[in-house]
Amino acid sequence: MKFRKGSGIAAGTIWLPSEKAATRNWPVVACDQYTSQPDYWDAVEAQVGDAPSTYRMIFPEAYLEQDGKEARIARIHKTMEQYLSDGTVVPAVENGFVLVERTVPAGKRIGLVLLVDLEAYDFSAGSSSLIRATEGTITERIPPRVAVRQGAAMELPHIMLLIDDRDKTVIEPLYEDRAMYRKLYDMELMRDGGHLTGWAVEGDEVSRAFSALAGMERQCGGLLFAVGDGNHSLATARQCWLNIRDTLSPEERETHPARYAMAELVNLYSPALLFEPIHRALFHVEPEKLYDGFLAYAEAAGKKAREAEEDAWDMQWIIGGEKRSIRLTEMGDSLPVAVLQDYLDEYIGKHAGTSVDYIHGADVVEQLCGESADTAGILLRGMEKTMLFPFVRANGSLPRKTFSMGEASEKRYYMECRRITR
Image 1 (cartoon, rainbow, N blue to C red):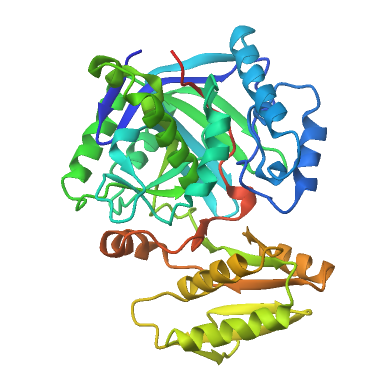
Image 2 (cartoon, rainbow, N blue to C red):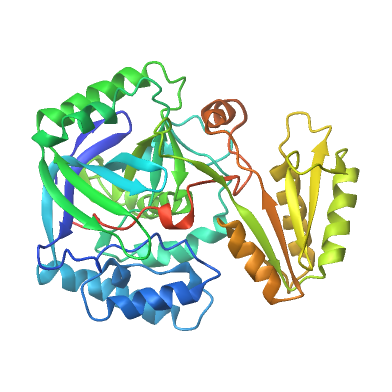
């Protein structure tokens, strides 16, 4: 298997559904969305029916706590093998990339589907790797994902890498010339996902992208790519690679497909790329006690929690249908979300029955709080996206679940896939 490599990424063989299989039922949204709304995924399953679909090759995390995980994983692996053997998926791009245009409410978001060299990625604290995590990685979340990837014949990416390309030197020039490229797909996405179009980037155009990235690498201060979405999926791919790396010869390590993970590269300065806050919903709690505990925790940490005016709050707690706006002061270099997350981690560690979900839509949090008296919600403000690269360079990862790139329906839909076994 051949790869063209450079600047922590590679070009390789990318597979797509056959013409017969490339219907609106094929692409589904990232598996880590709508985790507190299994009815969303039930509706997807009903819509897909028996049609070929990426739904059959992923494990929606809304179902992770249900029984039968091993059987579901076995079905996923079997479906991958079937799709490969019966021609449901076919090689579409050789030694290249896929240029993607995604229409979302904020406009047209463009990206480049490519391969990430896992030798250039390290999620550990203090990492100086070319590709870095933007949030803390929960190692306990990796083994269940390894169980899905280990033994799988293919991967489907919902990972999105960000590049700090203010001058728009890498992806945008390719997009300007898209009329020259072979169009691969052009379709509406299910369930308010917008529109998706893709073109093959091959030959000299691949070299053009590599050259632009090499120029950026020389000026990036050691951080070229930041993981915007799918950090735990990328960490899983890295763990699977480490599991086999030492069994390979040096020559085999260079070309083994498991050394790479597929992702979509997006420019931080894309006008259609919006940073949204990630809210919290706490289940099986006494909301008043949870709220009072946070005020005491913040005070003990040297922060002052004050009632805030309508437009000056850092977070809004939803308790019994009422919103309470808070602003934290005397923060120094810390972020309000860091204080909150430390408190929630400590609280959940002491209350076995309590659980938390991270939700992109404020309306969903409000709905969940209205359905149960033992649910509390916390709405947060988003961060300015221009803060991301400077913060990661200076401080390492952001607090967990600090931001989301768009709402849940704007997350990456699975379209491309790639073989990860020889």
